[in-house]
Length: 364
Image (cartoon, rainbow, N blue to C red; front, side, top):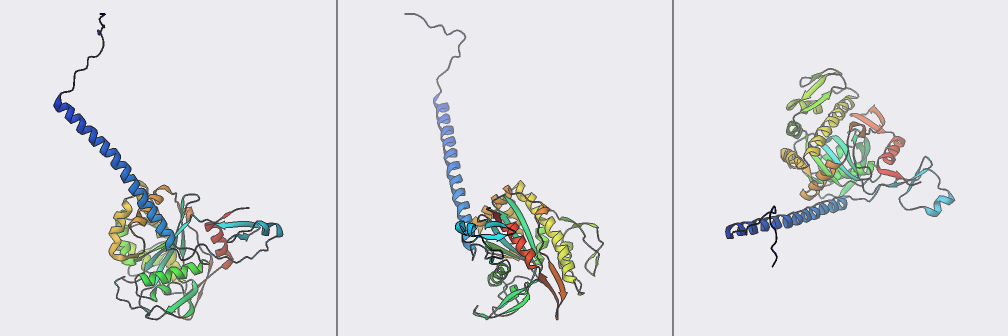
């Protein structure tokens, strides 16, 4: 029988009993970890899908209702689809993947002491639409002047509508219980202003709650848009400020009572919003789970209809989307002195263009 030459080859020794058991245990751990990873990823996938689906269901409308202002040709009529809009000669359709959220800053504590059917729910001194655009994976913001004159609904203590009137849009939140009811009324008012725009969620924050949120991200750096002097705030136009603690509160809250005082405060709020969203975006980009920490810091000051699965979905989306200050769009209009307070009248054509540019895509 010939011999096999083993010179220069590696010699393997049998694995001893204890090592064999250890190897089997390690293998089991690896297999378990792999299976667990798949299970967890599946659970997260289902959790995110649940959040996405429930957000879509939250909206009271499917798409805006924009009246046609341009004639549709016979050729276009042949291919026309419901929901299309003709604008400046082009044909547009609503971007179904867009998700819209209403952010509210309320001028009183959301402590549940207001009564349905009254006027003590607190006014929305700050309003903005946060838009997540799945088409180009961007985050957009539309600040809304609190004095925007719009249709405001009045309700009784049973939640039944009594009548409609024209008033500052911020008043709508006050017509309710200061909690979910008030928020739902405000969502409907903003949706109506934007021609039945779908709104998929809301978050109302009492202005006191801006302090812990501001400080959670290390403070906010802003440049004062104009001079302002009061007992709480003294800033010069162009002054660079690092807002920490109560300074952030007064920067957003203080206003004078002269004509345009609310607009001047709105300018500060807009500047602050730019910086705040940039700060939040940077944090979420680095760590999507930080959204949970930030939410916990303001949980005693906020009313929202966004649940944990929806928040998780939004965190993962926001961490992938792009944002910069060019993504903030203003609503054009004019402020006039009303009988009681300032009134802001929207330029209808500019609003229509803003809606088309933000929420629609060109199909031909």
